[in-house]
Image (cartoon, rainbow, N blue to C red; front, side):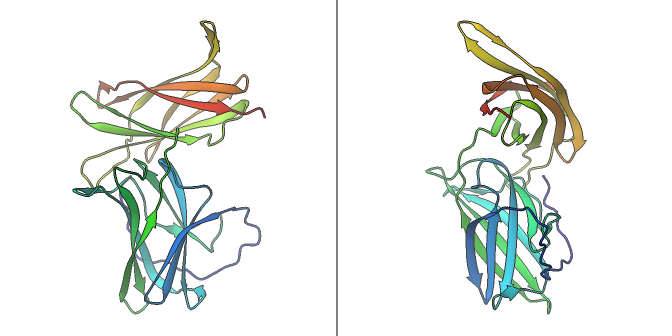
Length: 256
């Protein structure tokens, strides 16, 4: 996902009493009188995450020109970013700025994540800071490499919590062209196969429609789980006339 820069935003607080958004605090930091708070719907994890931001000054929502971010992984001898876009006013709750980040590795011995940010005040001055974040490992993210060593990142975007019956089946796919550049993969083809192992050499698939490209790296289809339990879904990606090695997602489907 390319980094999208916007010129100006309004952070005026409009209390949205109708919002069903349920968020948990992730972290916050105060720099030069501005408190930047990050929230999410669940703990941050590898794969696609929606991030919700509040920027306050003196305990009130700050009036600012713009707010931009850059997630960074510090691995000691090298640093890299990850697929992300820039925060804009959330459609779910106008009290927040929202963006998406696809974290491509968890926090741990390999390195640590932080999100650098820059606030442009109404007078044009800027305030910069850094917010450390912890990223957990998740079954919703994997990667594969082509024969020429080009890496493709595949995020299981939906369903977040698979249930028996019909579900949207959505993947989000990116590649890497540099340590700071992770463009969306727009015109790939996917071949998927869901399967439930029943033991003893038996098992079965279920009804589904193959996800197709919808733009911005999203590939959308449907899947109708015939029963609850442990399922796998294999994904084979064809990109730039290359058939990539198959990857597998393993997860639990809950009864509806």
